[in-house]
Every structure is written in structure tokens, then in C-alpha cells.
Image 1 (cartoon, protein in one colour):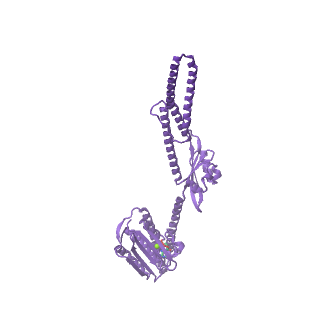
Image 2 (cartoon, rainbow, N blue to C red):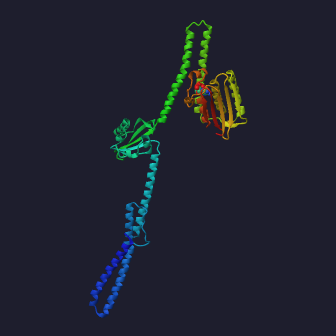
Length: 459
Ligand SMILES: Nc1ncnc2c1ncn2[C@@H]1O[C@H](COP(=O)(O)OP(=O)(O)O)[C@@H](O)[C@H]1O
Ligand SMILES: [Mg+2]
């Protein structure tokens, strides 16, 4: 209601009262004597003025505030919680106006809180690492989150409001939902999904939604991507299978030759010696295999326990160099070292020595006689760069990313002949990564390889 209306109403009332008074005047005045006429007219005017003041007072104190309150109430009904009415400091309608303002303020606060809670709930739901789906007791989909869309593709409108079995065609999901409804208990199942051309393992958990009076109201389905867990499990299985295989070969060999030695009457001293040599060689292999396995598990366990020291490269290298030079000489390889003087950095000296030795032994083992092996140590502002280069057999491109895997070898027979375990580079990579460094390899088949290790000077 606008002010114009209000004013109109006010004037209408005045007009009505004025008409009543004029009517009374017209009726009464002719009935009175001349001297009384003036008095009656005067009384009528006074009465009219008093009534006018009274009506104005009523309008100001009752009609206007009530109308303003009605306006605000209408706004609140429409959802505009910002609406407020003017509260007169006095008057009977003051309580009504202030009560309506309090109501409006409370409603506004409630709506703000509701909005905040709604958006918090939405944030939590959409940032969950698991897919979520809420269905009612009839199986209609009421709610899904962002991860769910990521797992199943399509859009939310393709799921919301539909029956779950019409939009998800996996029998295992249907079974999980049915059993959750049937037993009113948490149920799980495993499904596989193709996401961006990759296979994902997903665990589906259904939990019943039960209200206060123990009525089943629906179910919540949680889809948890367990591909990483599966991968770790596969790796563990592979590792156990590999270790068993690696151990089996030398043990079978040792046992075979020992049995032959025992059973046959070995007259030929030469053959006996040959067999014993094989046994010795295989047990050495067994020993280095176990040694490397123990090293690997030790590094994995001690990840946090590096014994960091300030390494002065010149003196630290000396002991490893002696060992390397001997090996290189045995194979008549040309060994050169280009080590910048005066480099110092923080690291675990024993573990890093293992890195250099493993890389150098590989370079020596996989390079033919007369080849060349170079060790370079240099520094940048932030890193120490260790390079081991050889002119050996090289590594085919498809194998380059795999040589750091446990037990991976390009040429199994060749590695075995050099006494390799297939674990050297896995150990190297582990140590480098624990030092927050990186390792890279460049290579050309038939020409040679170069391993580059970068270690941050300060950990
Ligand atoms: N310098 C290199 N030149 C050629 N091949 C190499 C070199 N270093 C490593 N490799 C390849 O990587 C494989 C894995 O190396 P490593 O983990 O040290 O195991 P291994 O015990 O066989 O030496 C080796 O079997 C070999 O095929
Ligand atoms: Mg090796």
C-alpha cells in the first residue's frame, strides 16, 4: 500500500466526518434560537477539530504502523528478509513493529546460516575423494557428487530423478543395493570402470538410511577408487614371485651339482673342480642377491633415517675410486675422472657411495673390453651433478624407463654373467630419491649410456 492511498483514506474519513457535522448543523441550527445558533456552530466546529485531532492520532499510531507491518510481513512472505519497518518510539503499535523487525532479523540470520551450511555441505560432498549417491526407498536417485560424475561420466541430469538400475547397469551395484535394502546393513562389492581408457578398480559400499522410528528411508552408496591399492598389491605379489624365482635358480643349480658330486664316483679331478666352482659361483650369487634384498628393505625402512653429513667430495670419492680403478683395469677399460675440486654438500656418505659404485660397476660390466668409462662430478648453484658415462652396449629406448624396476634386466644372461642381481639400479634410485634428488639416463644402443644424478646440496 502506498502513501497516496493512505492520504486518500485519511481525507476520505475527514470528508465523511465533515459531512456528518454539516448534516447535524443543517438539522440542529434551524431548530435553535438566534443566540443559541452561534453557540451550536461554535461547539460543532470545536467538536469537529477535536475529532480531527483524534483521527489523526489514530492514523499515526495505529493504522499507519499496522499497514507498514503488513507491508513488511508481505515482503517476508516473499522471502525478502532484508525488509524492516519503522518503529515509532511511542504508541501502542510499537510492540508489533519491533516484534516484526525481530522476526525479520531472526529469519535473515537463519537464512544466512542455512545458506552457509548448505554451501559447506556441498563443498564437503563435492571435494570428497569418493563417489557418492543417495537413493530413496523406491530406488530413485536424489543426490550425487562430483567424484561420482568423474567415475561414471555423463552429467548429473542423467542420473537425478531416475531409478538407480536404469542409470547404472552394473549387476554388482544392483546386488549391493538390493542386499543393503534387504538386510538393512552395510554391504560392499567390487566393480571395474573404464575411465579415460584406463581400468579402475572401485569398491562400492551401500549403507542403509534409517530414520528415527527405524524406517528404511533409502541408501547411500559410496564408490571408492582402490586402483592404487590394487597396484601395490600386484607389485607385492610380483615382487614375491620374482624373489622366489631368483632364489630358485641358484639353489636348484647348487643342489643339482652337489647331488651329482655325491652320487657319481668322480674320478676326474678336473670335472669335480669345475662343479665345485659352479657351486661357489652360484652361492656367491645367492649371497649378493640376499645382500641386495636386505639393502633394499633397509633403505625402505630407514627412509627417514639418513645419517646426513657434510661430504667433501675429493676425500669422500677416494675409497670408491680405488675399487673402481681395479675393476676397470681387469677389463682393460680406459677410466677417466673429471671431478671438480672443492665440492661439498650434505648427504649420507655411505649410501651415496653405494650409488656411485653401482653406477660405475654397471658401466664397467656393460662395456666391452677396450671401452671407456668416465666419471664426472660438478656443481651448480643448488645441486651436485654426478655423471657416469660409458661406451658400452647401450640400453634400448623401451627399456630405459624400466631398468630402475626391481629385477628388470635388458639381457638376463649378460646380467647373470656379470654377477648382477637386477636390483642395483632400484637401490640407486631409492637412495637418490630419499636425498630428494633425481636420476636420468640417456643412451644409444651399441654406442653407450650416460646416467646423471642430481642431488640438492642442502636437504
Ligand atoms: N651402463 C649400462 N649400460 C647398459 N645397460 C645397463 C647399464 N646399466 C644398467 N643397464 C641395464 O639395466 C639393467 C638393470 O641394472 P641393475 O639394476 O644394476 O641390475 P644388474 O644387476 O642386472 O646390473 C641391467 O641388467 C642392464 O640391462
Ligand atoms: Mg647392476
